[in-house]
Length: 356
Image (cartoon, rainbow, N blue to C red; front, side):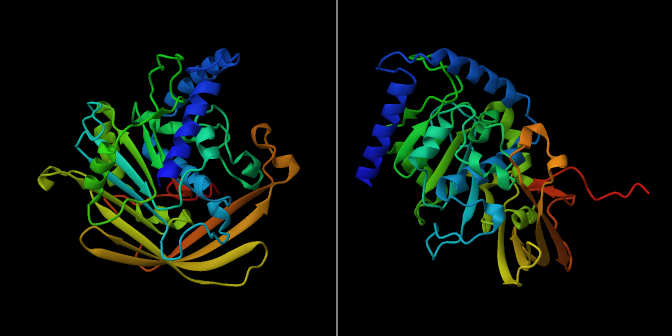
């Protein structure tokens, strides 16, 4: 562990020195970086709608990108997880200011994959660069290269603890290079890791990757509201993730306002492939004090994109995948509304409409 942390720290120091000229020679591309970061900021804050759903989508892709070379919606065999581990994503929100940044609440996101690689850190410290660009021909949708930066919609200082990396980023420009968003800063000491462990629960070891997001004051209620509205059916279309949970942790549980939920899924069987299609069943269980279950028949088919149907922004996409889920039994609910059609995550479209 010590050697991993040492290598990670040296990598971060190299990025700061060579890319951002912090304690090193001046980088002639600094002015270009300033303009790119300015454009990034404008792009980010133009997207501040249903930000948590978009954040979940970005995090799932970012985290999967950090841990495997496969796209999750291709449903290929993934050997990056330990056999005894179910791929999971956990959201924990607390009113504790564990980063000592003055935040009124902190959102922690845990994932149990094997951890960030150096190329993933390089990508996060860049603008418009993605380690998945070569995979967009399969239908990957992150063409804008925003990815991880979407966390700045709800936090001014995101932290990453993964695979020896202990770093944070800042929305405000760095004093040494006058750039925000993409300049990594090493986080000293074990105090914050101890605080994370106390929030997560001392009985269980921390998952390999933890994101710590001290929330902006105006985002606390919207984040809590959106955490409370995450629907169990979201797990149907995140094919790598098998378990997702949402909970709030406070010393006085009576102060909790987030509706907790734990969602798990099991794939029961897969039929023979035909016509570039897969058919299988998934079984969802959702519990927030009372467990509810529903089975879903799934049909996933891939379609080639004809040249005449391509658009300029996505010319390299050769294939799209469409998945249908048919509930077998009473459809799972959470809150007062049912979700509509999904595009990886819920949309506001409630059903298909035939104008005739």
